[in-house]
Image 1 (cartoon, rainbow, N blue to C red):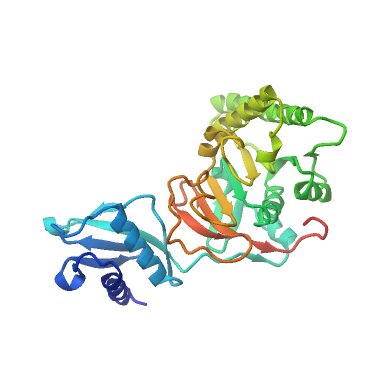
Image 2: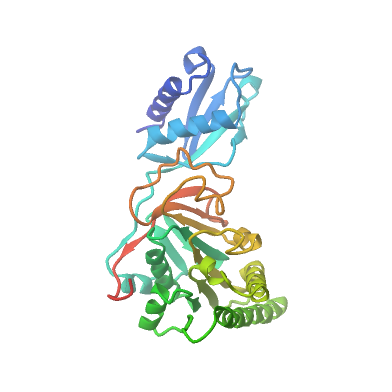
Length: 356
């Protein structure tokens, strides 16, 4: 589809779907202009309709459905106004709708072990058209209901991270991460039947405290040599919400304080967090931890209720969510990616028997 064909198609779709009190492109009330990164809805003002968030989201819903699967229009939190380079005051502003060509495509990996060995640049491929640069990562949070595919995706992250980072794995359920760690000869902190939960979380606090000491040591090195390169250190915690339920308040407060400190100070010193939980309310992690994480993943059922903690400002209506296991939403917040939420399909891969 050429740019001119796309403009005509979008204009027709909006003429039929907007229903803005009889004002259409036929009455010169608006026009559509397509560019490489998206399209502009250009209202001619004064207009007989409100140019507001409601109009913006109406256009998004119509355009995203109409352009699927040739383009994926990226959902914004509010109306995206841009100025236009013209002297005509009637058309000096537009609503911009960024997009990318095609749709999110699942990454299929025939041999995961061979695949991760090829990664020499600290890159973590997530989908065919999305890769995370771990050098620019603070932390990853993965939320989702039981059976949504969190453990499967976590195994992929563990396999990938094990080649680029030292791992500290904490597994409160003594489940998939523990089996993976055993297969790969990596230490893991897990509960045992002859100790209390508070004792278990105290051990975790000791490990987190050691990571905080590493951060302080590295900060001192960076003070003298800002260009110093450090080995990546990643703390991986599965089922964070289940970890602190029923734990002594003082120990829980210490755990959350240590998490906050690592999240706030770890960026420059290459100390990271990977947190997995069914949800990330204030009982799971402090708000300060959520706000520092720059890769947000919600797997499974997507609704305004399920995304309220990771994407509090997002209305998911109109986003085309793929159907199937390991699907949902992802947002990557760094200098390489626009701050937008994308439909997600987690990688499919083959690994050793007995882990999953």
